[in-house]
Amino acid sequence: MMNGDSSTWLLDSGASHHMTSDLANLSLHAPYNGGDDVILGDGSGLNISHTGSFSLPSLKSPFFIDNVLYVP
Image (cartoon, rainbow, N blue to C red; front, top):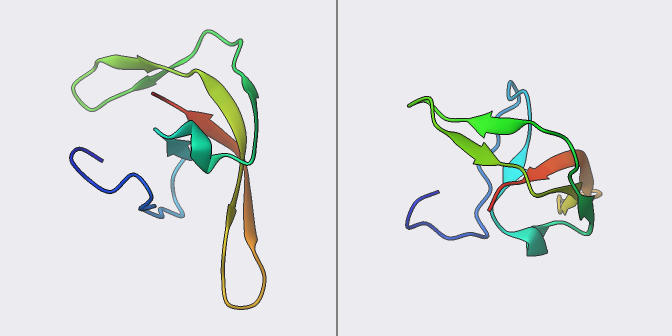
């Protein structure tokens, strides 16, 4: 999100991958060693730095998301 609150998550159940620009959002993370980039709508690419897991609080129990991409 440009000029947005980095703690805000936009949920998209049809997304092919989950991403964050804040490494602190990931509870467990490791460096990403693959050669893939995230391709934006204008065709430019952003490097994937890490992958990890995220826990989203909910009323009943946390919702865990694995394989979240960290794209600084």
